[in-house]
Length: 91
Image (cartoon, rainbow, N blue to C red; front, side, top):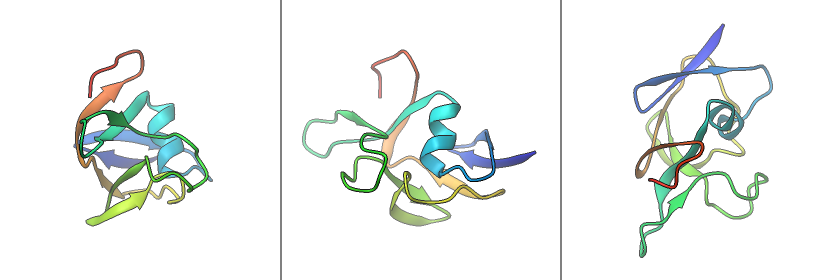
């Protein structure tokens, strides 16, 4: 089984998934907040246009989760937002 780590949490990944797809499949809906209002952000457009899904991938900040292919062993970090689970509005 292939896995990555997101804020210390193990997330299973499937072949061909992006980081954003893997997080969404694991029930993670947001991983950063907006600068001015602190609103939660995660996947929005899913095609690399909106920049809502930025996170840190293997130490490289501001990566678009919807475009980065998920790989076994990668480490992801949220950018200033605690993990929000599906069904909650908390970030």
